[in-house]
Structure formats: structure tokens, C-alpha cells
Image (cartoon, rainbow, N blue to C red):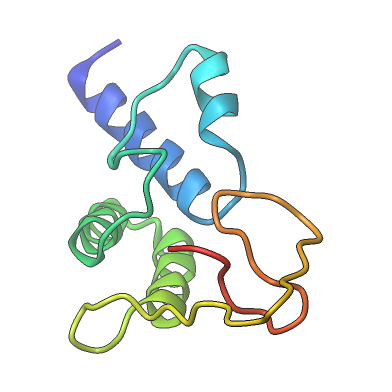
Length: 111
């Protein structure tokens, strides 16, 4: 596999993980565990921006649109994280993923 192919697969894998289309475990189990970000951490503003720039450069604009929506939901205009943490006395959890949300208030359980 060429370096360019590894880069592209890493961008695709990170895109899929960031948007919740698959888990890091699924990617690692596939044998193509290349990433553009640390897969078990939430990506920062600059990392997502770099992935958007990559997809824009190769004209995969549908991926750019989805990542821009992710950015708008998860980051403030200054690039800081937009997170509202749950302050429910007894949080409820209906599903588990990298980001766990309270089913009572829809806010994140932890950062």
C-alpha cells in the first residue's frame, strides 16, 4: 500500500469514527487501522478542519458538508468545544458510544 493510500484510508477511517458511522474497534479489526486523529479521543477543532481540507482538496464535498455540520454542533466560533454537561441528579443512559448522553436532558454525561 502506498503512503498516499494510507493517508486516504486514515482520513476515511477518522471521518467514519468522528461521525459515528463505525467504532475504532471495527476499524482496528479490519486490518486497515490508519487514522488522522487519535481514535479513542474526541478530535479537536484543528484536526477536523484538516480532514475537511483534505476532502475538499480531492473534491469529496459530501464528506466536507457532514464534517462542517459536526463542527457547527461541537465547536464554538472560536474553536473551543461546545459541550453542555449533564447536571441531572440521576442521569439516564439509553445507548453507549464514545459520547454518552443523558436521555433526560440530552447533554453529555462526561467530556
